[in-house]
Image 1 (tube, rainbow, N blue to C red):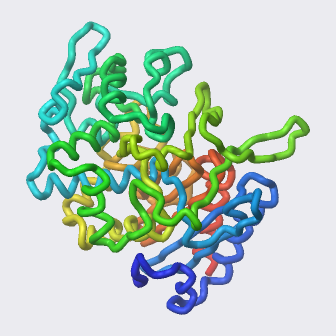
Image 2: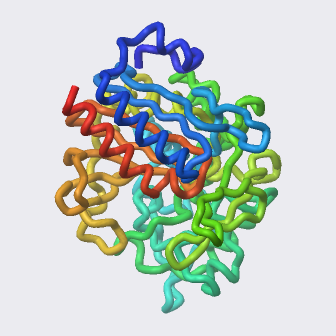
Length: 404
């Protein structure tokens, strides 16, 4: 990025060329419709092309009840937007020889030995945790009443004050869904990985991410804490009233949001409780500008944080799209999904595009072929992660770029 990550995002206007007219108008329309229809309360959308910002906007409200406007340097609870930061840190440690991704996690977490249905406890490697091929799951990925539910396993964005030792104990008592390396299931494994690399280095995970990722990139607003409460975006849960109108509700601890056949459980106050463990899969807070800086750094080859070979491995399909549990056309790399067949999923994105999101209402993607990065952080779950807005925004970006 041409702008230092620590600089106020408002200063972009003085440093960049005007946004292409069609791109600006189409993206504005996608955002405006989502807010007018009450699908979103507020959003920050940033777009970079060839490392240059070509669009930036804060829209709607950061806090509806106080009429506080959204600002471009707003701080959001990131949920799974945390994963690229932790994945990059794990790859850096592997580069440095401080961890071996193929070593069993028991090398650092000797008591973590979840079992298969037959009672055996197979070895789980750090690489399998990183690629979601460990056999673990998420509570929100399981039907209510199952073992993840009865064991009260935290997904990393609920249960303020829960420590990592207790959550590891709970996870370890749940049955593995398949032998490690023989399937794919999006899982709490990145939380396990985060604690393993912390113990491998003798450094708490928040400090490790700071040393390896955020400090080298000058990302002062992103970490396992809220850097400035005055800029925090209040989270909301997307909802439909009895009359069919949209009316997102202010999210409080204990809020639940339906997701397919299960529910997401939230506790926005989690980061305020110092006893909460630092969730490697969902525990960070930060700004859209910081997320964009990380993604652009990786798109350009790793910069100050990683070697090109490590970035190439992260962006390569480590889990093929043919594996059950992945959406059509998408495989999985390290920290995100990897697109291998745009036709299968009806997207204008190029093969090799990487993408993911976060359950507080976020989405992002990087299209290396088009030298394009898009970050959309919203305060409305889960519309901002996988609702109509994400499709409208994606299509507006490509239509705008192709028209200008």
